[in-house]
Length: 218
Image (cartoon, rainbow, N blue to C red; front, side, top):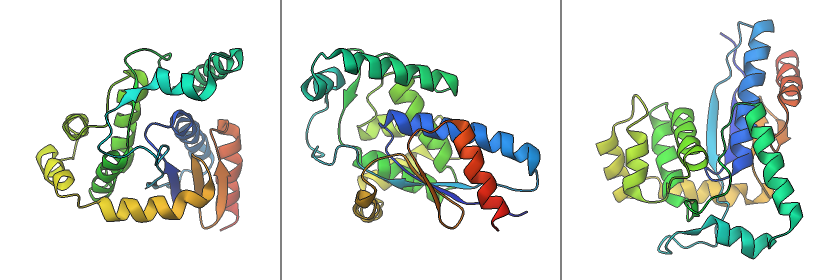
């Protein structure tokens, strides 16, 4: 079966990464109707949305962070409304900003993604993180919670992941990926096939165009 590999640079707390993947997934479904013989294996690479957050720092209120960054401007409220509309259109449920939502360092989250990649379950774990963080407004930054989320993914050994995170077995790879991916400036960033790139939470139709281009360019 011919395949078009897709590499996604992302962070589990990036809302447009959730929207972007959901758009991509819809595009893949549409393209497979035209090219059923193709597969589209997806892999994920680390990008820290807040590299300034030290691991030892307690999580902080997402509302407080946004207020510090944007204030109470009407433009920010419009941005949030637009995000939720775009998310809903592609089946990504993002809860409104609320007092339960927090932010923190995602180093351990990325290390868990490395582990899941070794088990062939990277996308499944990423979707579980997206659901926990954006739909349920859960704190995904602590090791115990990461392991709890991993229990919902069939094929992952939660006890093994717990030891993996305690021993920081994925730390070096996360550091390497984060350093390499700094150049892109923001996420999500998609590399489709050998060298076709698309950035941001695009509409499904935009992903369809680039997927077809990757197929027809082979």
